[in-house]
Amino acid sequence: MKRSIQHPASSIQVNLGDRSYGIIFGDSHRTIKPHLYRDACIITDKNVAKYHLRPWEELFPLAQTMILPAGEKTKSMKTMSLVYDFLAQIGFGRDHLIIALGGGVVGDIAGFAAATYMRGVEYIQIPTTLLAMVDASIGGKTGVDLTLGKNLVGAFHQPKAVLVDFNYLKTLPRREWNNGLGEIYKYALLTGEIELSQIPLQFDYRQRAFSKNYSKIVRFCAQYKAGLVSQDERDVGGIRMVLNLGHTFGHAFEAGAGFKALKHGEAVVLGLMGAVFISYKRNLLNKKTFDKIIDELSKFNIPKITRVFQFMELLTYILRDKKTASHNFRMVLLKDIGKPIVVHDIIVREFRKACGFISNTFGIETKD
Ligand code: GLY
Image (cartoon, rainbow, N blue to C red; front, side, top):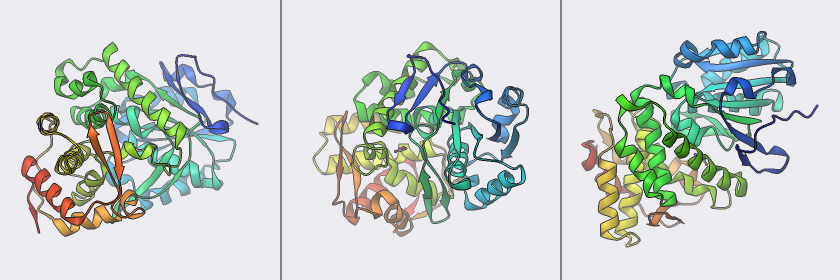
């Protein structure tokens, strides 16, 4: 049976032929029609389950739920093995649905399980964090980290729908807001939307009640990403690649900090600084624009990192990063705000200087 999740015209469409789907805004519980599926497996984490699991268990009364520990450390092959065993134990079949209820980690694990269990089953993404709403839940990238690097094992597998429900943000802790704001600032640099660049700077956790403004921002970022994914689903045409602005250094610092001390969006802030630094040093960005971006990035709330990084270790992560490794020293830079470019000739000296600049700005100790 070909199942399709109906969605209103106001939703955003990811156009991928027979793999097309909607990013649907609104009350997520009303969007999905449980009768389309014989049964479901809900994959979530401990923090999300506490607040948001029950309505989904009521909607799918026969669903089995797997609750994972929260945090990037969970995104491992070890967890995948437990998820596969769980699916097999509950008799999960091809006419069942995986529901990924959570942030980027849950989405990546549940999506990878959907991509690989029984050679592929259907799943939906219900992002509960700001970061997952603007980025991770869209575009079908799924997978896990290895100790040697982030997202090194994975698959492209598009969800049947992404349900964006702003109510989930009401329980989002402060640090998770910062995590999402880092990615939102990346979108500001990519698109040149000045208003967007001010959001992270003006954010006040005490007044975080979700306003129309935020819904506009999430829609804008989702629309932008949906457009890139629709043109370059498998990230091979250099179009989707721009979304990795800030991720070369970001992934290296995130992995170097053991996937614990830095959250992904925080690491992206460090990474954006590195990309902007190299862009300036290559005379792509003028001094005024460089100063403005660095000033804004310095205002992000980045936790104190006590670990001393070795440059060679960071370089190893950078070179192992699939975005770099497959295309020798490839990286996304900026020609101007709103004008990303992909370059293929970064040299180690530039990585080294940029790591030094990032470390000095954020008080991180990096040794040669
Ligand atoms: N987060 C980058 C991408 O989905 O391509």
